[in-house]
Amino acid sequence: TKRVFSAFKPTGRLTLGNYLGAILPAVRLQDEADCVYAVADLHALTIRHDPGRLRARTREAATLLLACGLDRSGVYVQSRVPAHTELAYLLESTAHYGEMRRMIQFKEKSAGQREVRLSLLTYPALMAADILLHRADLVPVGEDQRQHVELTRDLALRFNHLYGETFTVPEAVHPRLAARVMDLAEPTAKMGKSDGSDAGTVHLLDEPADVRRKIMRAVTDSGTEVRHDPEAKPGVSNLLALLAACTGRPVESFSYASYGALKKDAAEAVTETLAPVRRRFGELSADPAELDRLLEGHAARAAERASEVVAAARRAMGLA
Ligand code: TYM
Image 1 (spheres, rainbow, N blue to C red):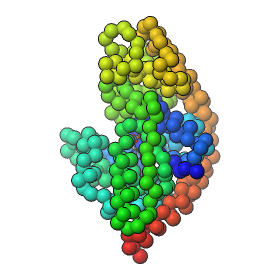
Image 2: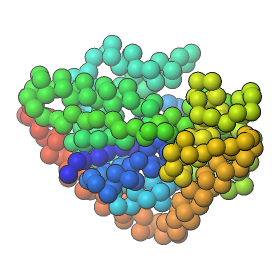
Image 3: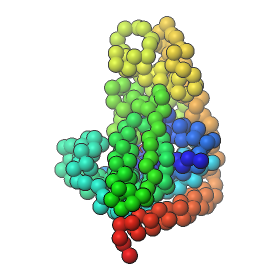
Image 4: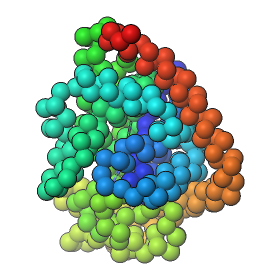
């Protein structure tokens, strides 16, 4: 069976973009593969952060991943497994400054900043470590992480070439429709946890009334025709993609006479999708001790699996 790994950075609250781009595909992969998922709290240290808020959001994200249906996988918190940072250093010693500096996300996030944390530059080496640590074959991610997974492949191949076969070379898997969910208020920008506008971002724990309002007020395009054409009609196409992804129906199966009718159905489909997540989140939150026990158990298992891979990498590189 194939191995699957993916992770979610608790820099903000999880969004509908995270859900449709990565969580839902991750839930589906559980039927056919050996899956492990993490809350990547170490990755949240790459930009200015508040310790108390990070702690709360890490917990919320872990609970949400379970509530979304990843409770059949080993969900854990990254920083509880020190092998991530150890392997990250070995991979930093495999990667080049130039390829890190060229990463699109590094360029975007560092542009115009006076103080850029060094970890923002080395971030993709840590992400590569996350993936290679689990010998993942498949990495379900949204479109924006494609370049980081490509780099992970390059690092794995380079390491294997320099020091002998050590790592499994992973592959990114993207959902067909919702690989890039757009901001509802600004449909040419990605819906994001921290960067997006509040009016344009649906958070998984938003009240249903707020979700409905955000979708009903979504920015649409000029004209009146409803068709899927992301170039010419980014707003309408985004709503159609949400509707199709939430209902599991092909985008061609929908036809509407007006934007209003499309919005109404999209709002309905999204609130219906999120209702069981909210309910399950409430149940899981009611028993914090049980949640801790679960996350710690999965962290221990991940650490066990990781130690074998890290030992192989250390040996291959000539460390004692
Ligand atoms: P992060 O935390 O920004 O996002 C988590 C996942 O959600 C996807 N995503 C989206 N998909 C579609 N539309 C959107 N608007 C949207 N916004 C976010 C992301 O592509 C991602 O799959 N570096 C990663 C976290 C990470 C990771 C890893 C991922 C750390 N280690 C190892 C995979 C494997 C990140 O910042 O994702």
